[in-house]
Length: 92
Image (cartoon, rainbow, N blue to C red):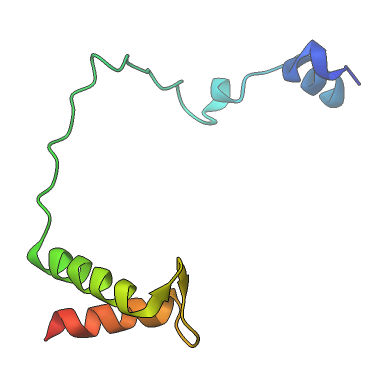
């Protein structure tokens, strides 16, 4: 088998015991994608943040202040419990 430095096509050719055939030649994966440069790509408009998302964010900040100390959760609190409480408070 061919070494790593000789390339994957050479290794594939050796394992199949025949000439290398591109799988796209038989309708495998289709044509190669055409990449465009960053400047040519049109940028998507940024989505507006929903009111619910803002409320949840505010509640998370409040709960983080109340239930974290020194960057760690207080006993009995974790991310799951905090998010559940934030969603519950945001719905009110």
